[in-house]
Every structure is written in structure tokens, then in C-alpha cells.
Length: 195
Image (cartoon, rainbow, N blue to C red; front, side):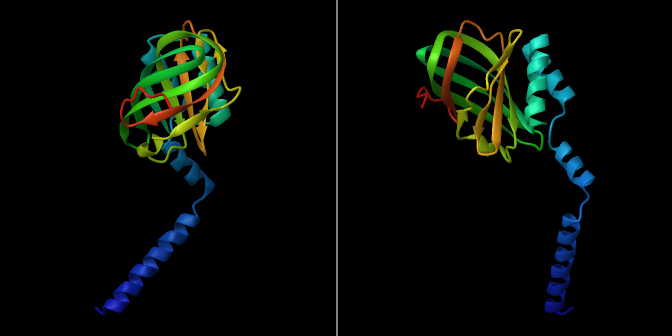
């Protein structure tokens, strides 16, 4: 077969396939999106299993996250510790899992400043939204002002960088209370430098 004819056929097949992808109905796109995200029942089950208990507060913070940001495409299960006297620090580590596949060990730390006092150590379950691949997590994420929501022993707040949103859920926040602003730096390796 003539090589130029073979090349033209391959190009034609690619164009037809590309056009077909553009013509996908909305339900097919939504189904593909749902295939790469977690539904509320799955997340509720995983969060309850991770924390080892269920509370009305935990159910409400999950409901709030889904109402505000929809279905997450990943999560981080981990633990962290923090302390603050006006200026605070937070350190943590966990494992990132994406619904589309792939997981990474993640370490995080960050400073905060505000009306904040106390210390705590806790488990944390972080909902991850719109993260394309696991390696994209390794950046700094700013805390979203006024995003802390705390009810019945469970708390959630949001961190954002571009379109990616991270929503840490903490149960039994402990002896740390107040309001502060800061950011969280997610890394490949542990670091005691919170910046």
C-alpha cells in the first residue's frame, strides 16, 4: 500500500474520532465525569470508617462540601498536629488517592496568623476537587477567608489554588480555637519549615 494513502487514512480516522468526541451528548460527558469522582454515599462511608465514628456534625460538613463544590475526584487520609499563640503552625502527612487512579504520599505544613490559641493533634480527611493528576498537589494553597464551618465536633475549611479546592475535615478539633488566615504547603518530603 502506498505510504501516503496509509497516512491519509490514519489522519481521516483521527479526524472522525475527534469529531465524534466533540459530538458526545451531555449525559455521556456527565457519566464520564461521575466515573472520575466520588459520590456522597461513598465519601460518607469512607469518612465514617476513617474516623471510627459518625456524628451529626460530620454528616453536616460532608453535606456542606457537596453542596458547595460537588463531587470530589480525590481525597487525602492523614493526621496532623498544630499549635498557635496568635502565630500558629500546622504539620501533617497522609496519602492522596485519586478516583481516576494513582496515589501519593503527601506532607504538608503551613503558618497562620490571627486570633488563635491552643494546640491539637487529630486525624484529617481532605476532600480534593479538580486535581488533574497526583503530582499537581505539590504546591501552596491559600486558606479561603471565612470558610471555617464547625458543627457538632466536626469542622471543615477550604484551601484553594486556581480551580483546585482542598477541603480538610477534622473531627474533634481539640483545644485550638479562634480565627486565622494562612496557607498550606503540600510537599513530597517532610519539612519542619512551615513556609
